[in-house]
Amino acid sequence: MMGYFSQTVIDALSWGGLYALAALGIGLLYGVLRVINFAHGDFITVGAFSLIVPSTQATAQLALGALPAPLLIIGTLLVVTLVALLSDLLVFRPLRGATPSTIMIASFALGYVIQNIVLLLYSSRPKAVDLWPELNEAFGFAGLRIPQLQIWTVTVAALLMVALTVFLKASSYGIEMRAASEDLRMARLLGVRANRVIALAVALSGALAGAVSLIIATQSGVVSYQMGGPVMLFAFIGTIIGGMGSLVGSALGGFAVGFSSVILQAYLPDDIRPFRDAILFALVILILVIRPQGLILVKTMRERV
Amino acid sequence: MAEIMLQVSNMWVHYGQVPAVRNLSLEVHRNEIVCVVGPNGAGKSTMLLAVAGALTPTKGEVRLNGVSVVGKAPEYIAKLGISLIPEGRHIFKGLTVEENLKVGAAANADRSSVENNLRTAYSVFPVLAERRHGAAGMLSGGEQQQLAIARALMSGARLIMIDEPSLGLAPKITEKVFEVLSELRRSSGLTLLIIEQNLKRALKYSDRIYILRNSEIVFSGRSAELQASDDLHSAYFGLGQAPSNVGAGQ
Ligand SMILES: Nc1ncnc2c1ncn2[C@@H]1O[C@H](COP(=O)(O)OP(=O)(O)OP(=O)(O)O)[C@@H](O)[C@H]1O
Ligand SMILES: [Mg+2]
Image (cartoon, rainbow over all chains, first blue to last red; front, side, top):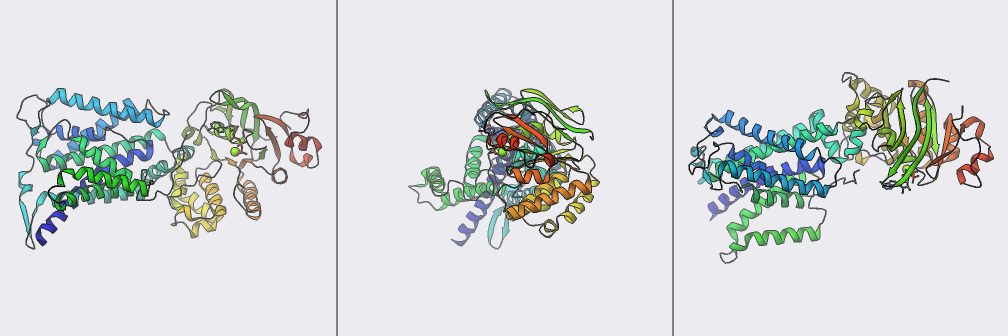
């Protein structure tokens, strides 16, 4: 019983970490654009598909996935970052000054276009990708059997969050980005270049999406052109309950959603388990009714011009 | 008269179809303190935002040291040695005091001067040095105003535009802020364009004033000559006709 509990907690930690990364990617862009980028899930899909060679055949040939681990990781992050930057250039930048709802709808459209490009290149068939099978071997510790991959997931998520924090706190680009997230107009009046700071946020958001791609592809061993959707949905909810506009809030919100979904899955009575997501969403609605500003209070939310 | 740093000629600014600034002309010379006074909704803030590039004038010309900046992005204009402290100060509350100052250096091409400017800022405003690692949102109103001024100076700007520095401050603190600004003008050769609601205070600290009413400049003149002018009061309070000596008072 104790073992089941501990293993559930580790499982919950790893899903929490995963959704925290995805929510951070959404939160970073929300900070500077004041828009939820609904294409974020499709950025994640792109990263996963970059592992395999474009083809409509059932069995996948590894592309980036065939490279040694360090190159594979860098390559995947790079591909998603480039796709994100291209999206900024072609979609978000021309819409600078448009209303947030216009940009949000454009992000939906962007996601749809990306999905269809993936569909064209790879077909709608889900494909098996066996990246690092040895990671699925369990690791024995204090009587527990923990799949190594979960330890990796938690570690990678934690490291990325530490790295992002250091960047945001200690580098001048990071400080300018936080200033721009709080008050873009004021930052621009002080000489912060809007296009550059937004591109930087987009690039970081893309790199985070790439990390999520790798984790999901390794964990599930399957890629499909709609795989980004559910992640996007959960991460989006995480950003909302975390209080949009706060990065700490996004990370915690994403973590909370991932963590509680695993705990609910494990401990809900069998009859109710199929309704897990409904229960989760009901909890979210309840939170929003009690605290519409999110669980984490954002220090400043200003009207922007 | 010293050279002209800022020249605004026949500027119009609209919100949608509605003009908020009409045919406005104004100039600021090197090392001057110029105050713009006027009732609520006159268009004072709109004017400054348009000069700084946060709004785009629909017509007219804005020149900074002879260079036209109409239609340029605010981050570009900020690099030309002008800095706007907008209404409400807009301190980055989630950043520390020092981080606010560092963002202020974004327009500074000379990154090596940043450390120097930080030191200068802390010597002019010792309270900021004490609170340097504290959250800027925790500062009092007067301290936030000091931070806003220090942040504007970090870019090495020679012309600072301040929208209502007295907003939300006790009169005693406001006087202190104006004293600091006067001192900065004397000691560092700064040029200042200040919006102030209080006519008496504007006359006390400025070399020249402009009165803006209903989107238009209705009066301008040298502060020293204006202390007791009836024209001035009628222009400010909008009694009777606008006075005849409208134009750049030299
Ligand atoms: N964002 C906006 N959209 C539409 N109209 C605006 C906007 N900002 C200001 N206005 C209008 O433009 C006019 C000028 O406003 P502005 O803020 O420039 O006046 P002000 O002289 O600075 O007033 P105050 O003393 O209250 O600060 C007002 O009628 C105001 O209602
Ligand atoms: Mg105003």
